[in-house]
Image (cartoon, one colour):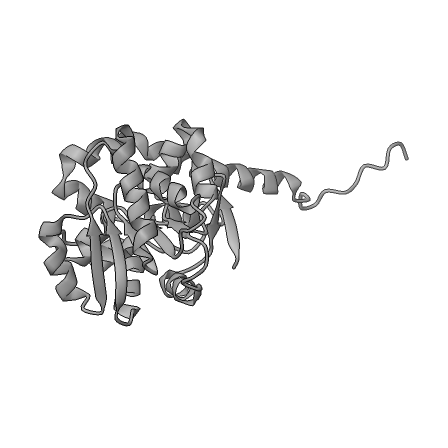
Amino acid sequence: MDSINLFGLSFNDLNVPEAVTQLLQRNPASPFAYVVTPNADHIARLSRFRDLVPVYEGAWLCLLDSHVISNVARLFRVPAPQVSTGTDVTALLLSSLLVQDVAIIGFSSVHLPALQDRCPSANFILHTPPMNLLQNPAAFTAARDFAIKTKARFTLIGLGSPLQELLAQAIAAQPDATGVGLCIGAALEFCAGVKPRAPVWMQRAGLEWFHRLVRNPHRLARRYFIDSPPVLFSLAYQGLRSSWLRTLARPQVGSRPHRGFE
């Protein structure tokens, strides 16, 4: 698989169908591996908490979950991977499965029937851990052991970042864990129809964040207006700097090498 380094992370250059193909082709009996889907919020957090970087580096697949980053990178001619959002990968994966168990960590039991109706081929096994999981070692261990004992081919972890990634790393550290864990945030709420997604044109234009902000300004305002902009500014700076360096290295039209005294 091709990869592209961006913000110090090695992203797999996969679109949604390609990412799902990789998931379906992996041997279910292989040691547990996990998938991370960083967006601008994740990357901003990694710049502040560098101890989290190895968690992402340990992932089997690292997929870009941000059309905004992709569009800004394209604008400033910075190489960037294809976009594979956690929601799109999850939706296509669930629609591609034959009848089999799928473990879920971090989803409301109230919404499980709606998800089951939309995904009849999946037999969902749910574990809903308590809040403040990182401050509750016993509950964290119980969530980890649930994934191990269930032996599901796929475990969908929707606890929010960085908790879901830390849990996936902890599962992968256990020698008897198998399958694949997907760190997908709120993807199942969109798959179940609990939360409406932005129209496709807004998603492709990189405006899905605006749709979510309008629906939940109190929770998302800081993320979008304070935490994430520096990530985009650094991407623009990288593109402008690279362009400037290329200009300096380019021979000037009409110039000739200096030959000293003639």
